[in-house]
Length: 197
Image: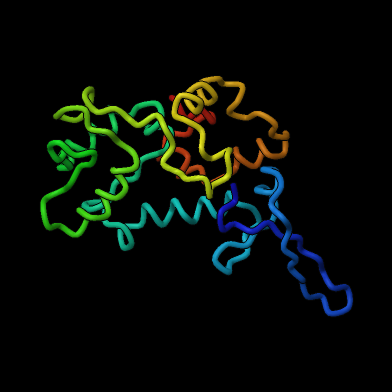
């Protein structure tokens, strides 16, 4: 889904030389590799938007590392116990008897973490890790497109198959993926386009 990313067509006015921007209806993932608008900014493609977003996550002035945890969605899907153990090692602990965890009581992060965690994790028993299981059902309601509301088992089955990782991508799309933000790709361990390495 595109959420707030608006695919557009750019047409140059031959007389004035100005560029007119025309919104398109989001209809194909291929549009993500064309021009798009997000939050009033024009991007050559959605990968530049991704680069800006991830760069902001890693900016110490915006998200101090001492208060921030960036977790790839692949880790939540394929290495859930390791993510939970890592969060626990950083000071996040389960709240006994409830379906969410917390940081130190009264901290600024507590409410936000509880809201996120309540939709993601079911605490079976303490401590984290092997005893913490992800929910199989989606946290998204019917207002989201069906393609974004698959169960965890459906997602595991689909993304576990290597042929699905680049399914229906053109040679140009794969070439674009190879040229994007190498320092971010390396930092997030997306070498060779294999998120599971």
